[in-house]
Length: 151
Image 1 (cartoon, rainbow, N blue to C red):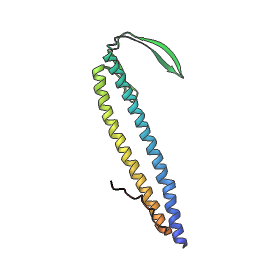
Image 2: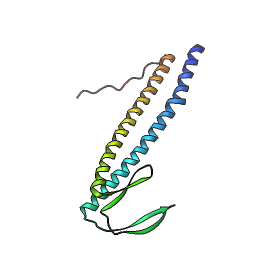
Image 3: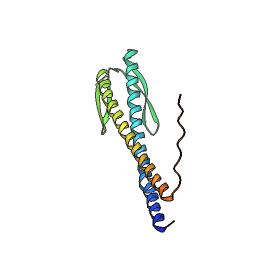
Image 4: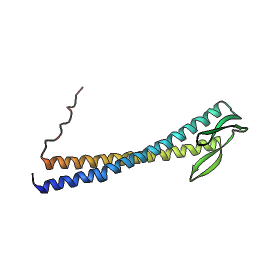
């Protein structure tokens, strides 16, 4: 095998290892953060729905003050809640307003997850394409796909 081919293979491997794989790891981590946001809003929606269903008007709970230090808190009126809307801002909502806001956020988050998933698929396809190029340069036989069963 010529040095030109070895050099090309090395460049392709460097591209995959130095660019595509780190990009894939980064995008997967970003999508995981969005999944965490989705879970937070889903939990909040379920909590509000439970408060509504059970007609809870006051509440006693534990509040995390930070560093896993908790304090007991009494909520005399649960009809209005504060929701983190981003950038450190909290907005006071009624249950209905909060559920409307949460529905909008969940829709936006679902779109973000779809976009990240498409991006992940695209990066994986590029990795596969480069690996296929390396295989051709090495003149290795193509991977055989599993036979399709007909039912």
